[in-house]
Structure formats: C-alpha cells, structure tokens
Image 1: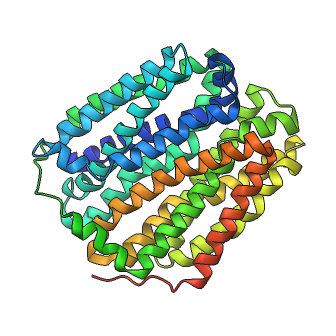
Image 2 (image 1 turned 90 degrees about the vertical axis):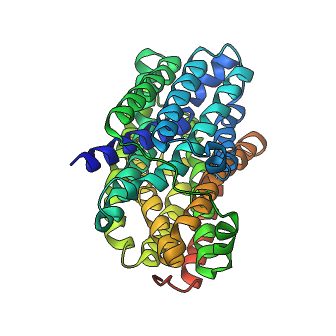
Length: 382
C-alpha cells in the first residue's frame, strides 16, 4: 500500500509541474495587460518554460549525481513553489521570464526523475501500473490546470493563480517527503543508449507525432482565450467555464484513448489527428455562439486528452527494452513542442491574426495524421 501512496505522491508532483507550466494559457490577457505586453508576447512565458525544460531534462541525472532521488524530487517541488511566488509578485515582464526559466528547470528535473522512480515504488509486475499513476498527474494537469487557474484569476486576479500553484508546490514537497521511501541513485546514465534509440524508425515516427500534435495544440490553445474573447465577446467567467468543459472532456479522452492506445496506438493517434485537424480551425467560426464554443471545446478536449497516453504507448511499443532511454527523448521533444508551438503561434498572432493560430494548429495536426497513416504500426520488442 505504501508503494501506491508513494506513486500517488509523485503524481501530485507531476500534476503540480504541468499546471505550473501551462498556467499562463488562461491568464494571457490580464497578465499581458498588467505587465505591459501583447498577448503574443505574453505567450512567450509558455515558450520559455517548454524550451528550458527540454534542455534541462537530458543533463538532470548527471547533475543530481548520487543524490537520493526522493531528495531531488522534494527540492524540485520547492523550486517550483519559489518560482511561482516570483511570478505572482513579478513587477515586469523580465522578472516573469526569470520565474518561468526556474519553472522550466523544475519541470525538466521532475519529469526525468518521475520516469525513473515509478517502477521502484512497487513490485516489478506492477511497474507499468505505477508509471501510469505517476503520469496521470500530467494528463489531468494538461486538461484541468488551465481552467482552474482561469477560474481563480476571475475570482481573485491572475497573481492569485500563480500564488496558488506555489502553495500546491509546497504541498507536493511535503507529501513526497512523507510518503516516498529512500531512493538511492542506481547508476550512471549512458548517453549513447539514449541517442541509439533514434536508430529505430518507429521511435523517430513517434517523436515526430509527438512534436506535431503537441506543437499544433499549443500553437492554437495558447491563444484560445483571446480568440474566444474576440469571437464570442466572452468575459473571464464564461471563458473559465468553457475551459473547464474542455478539461472535463480531456480527462474522459485520456481514459478512452488509454483503452485503445495500449493494443493499437496507431489507431488512437490517427483518430486524434483527424479530430484535432478538424476542430481547431472551426474555433473562430463556431466559437461565435455559446453552444458552438462549448461543442468545439468538448471535441478538442476529448481529442487532446488522449495525446499523452497514446504517444507514450507508441514510444514504449517501438523502443521495447530501451523504452526508458527513449522516454528521455520523448520528454525533451514533448516540452520542446510545447515551447515551439507557443512560439510559432505567437508569431502568427502578432503578424497575421488571432484566428491564424487556430489554422496553424489544425495544419500541424493534419501533418501528424499523415505520419500516423503512413508509418507502420509499432510492434512491442522485449
């Protein structure tokens, strides 16, 4: 029982770090106004975090050295709390950027070590289930963290949302300190093994699918609030409700895709690609009415909610016994795609139009569909 509680504690950590990463999505308008920047520039706070996390993840293990992994996870949660307190008090955009750099470092470290410790918390036969519990925090935060922050912003202001995440980080640190066993370092990381997985064609395809689906989603989703404000004339309360609808649909999509992706991740990702390619470009049109906006957010949530579990299943099937090495690349690509998607989406918003970000997201999802259809289904090895 203690092992499962420990896995749940790490899941709280992954929920915290992903919520912290994506918090700016629901706060772009008020945050940008307060800091004196445009929505496109404010979206860089997401880009910065994703890129820093992608860079921080590969050297995390060598930097931690022989430090007990429980200690690393607890200190990472404390770092997240400090970073979000700085964000809550940021007097200008430069300080906000510094805070988001710290969030990116925390995210890169926490994801890296969460992958490694999950199988060590329970008996060997239950390792896969423990890993799924640990990363359920990522799935739930991906779809619920933003609407919760938006709701809190509407009630108490955008700074209160960052302060709440800081408090959540401290709670996660305490819970992990109490429930995790000692987790001594197991040994050095072989960089060659990580790079070697790129020689597997299905792994490369899985990473491409991850980059296209995640990048396309964040190119559009980062700017969904200002798009809905323009098309629907919605205020913070209605935007929060729509994002909550999206979040609930996303949780349902996560579990639905999980049932399909295990035996056939290719099928799951093809369906996700079709849905995302269709729904994102429709937001500027159907989003002009409350019913239409709710409909597109439900479909979007159902589709994107299955991305994490489906891409993870693809990588695991393709890499086989090297899945731990491939997971490091997966985390890096996933986070780089978050930052890259937000960056390119911001450029489109600033140079073309807000709806242009929705069209870009749909185009990238369509490209992902092409990869899924044209690539051979990954087979489990070892």
